[in-house]
Every structure is written in C-alpha cells, then in structure tokens.
Amino acid sequence: MAGVFGVGKVAELDVRREIDKLREELKLKDKQKKRPKATLPVQLLMLHYLGFLEKYELSNTKKAQLFSFLLNGDSQNIREQLPNFIENQLRNPSNEKHLMELSELFKQLKLNEISQLIEKDLIKLRTGK
Image (cartoon, rainbow, N blue to C red; front, side, top):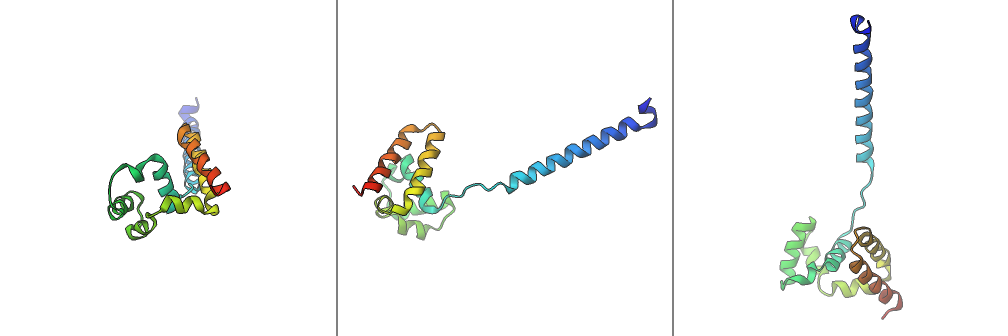
C-alpha cells in the first residue's frame, strides 16, 4: 500500500539522494588525496634506473627535448642537469631519501633487480666509494 500513497517512491528518492551525496563526498576525498610529485632530478633518476637515459645515442640537447616533452619540464633545465647527472646525484648525501623512495617503489612494482641496483648505489653513496 505504500506505493499507492507514494511513500515508497519518496523513501527510494531519499535513498538515491543519500547515495549520490556519498558518491560526491568520495570524489571530493579522492581529489583531496595528495599524490606524491617527483622532482625533476627524481624523475631523471627513475629514467636512469629504467635504462632510458643511456638507451639511445642522443646528444644531451636531444635528450633534453625528449625528456622535457615526457616530463613536462623545461628543456634548458634538463639539458643543464644531464651532463654527469648520475654521478652528481650519487655523490650528494641529500639524495639518499630519493633513492630510498625509488627503491621502495620498484620493490612494490616487483622490479627487484632495479631495486637492488638502487640499494647498491645507496651503499656507494653512504660509504663514498
């Protein structure tokens, strides 16, 4: 009999409104979650460990153009960082945190060989060898 008086439809509309409200709240929470952003040096380190920096015989200018498009960065800034980039990154103790984060990321992705390579580089960084 509830359908005759419209009570069932009203209740159904209320439930649908509540569901829509919850969906909107979830969307808002998803938008509010901060996705970690990698700095340009971290992005370049990642490309190095994936083998992209050394894969093609390109000048640093051409690599910078390619990576600026890929990373949405400034090609001049990238070109300036490319010469001796890896050596400079592995000499700077402040990069230890970034290397540890990359190692953990590769572990989570089940790319254990890359993670182990980063762990070796971390040892070099810590020991200065």
